Length: 119
View (tube, rainbow, N blue to C red):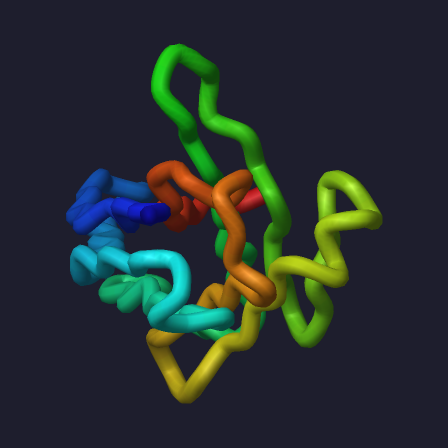
């Protein structure tokens, strides 16, 4: 049985005068029940969200977080090109970024979370 604990995260920080808040709901997936899953990162306080860069990370116990991808204005960039077959991301509307994992297997176990910063 595979359990993917997907982190429920609320992070807030000041960026100049604006405060940014990222929220995720906790999602758990058990292997055999689903082959694909998606999770949302809900952003508050990011002006021009469609131009913002949202980063997706995975962390497994006893290891440093690993960035999988980031999505900027209209394009997804992967830290490893092989990830493009497994992971995807899409921005919706003015504040939602969705992250999708395909073909779930035991190697996907971990905590996934989103982050934002300006380049």
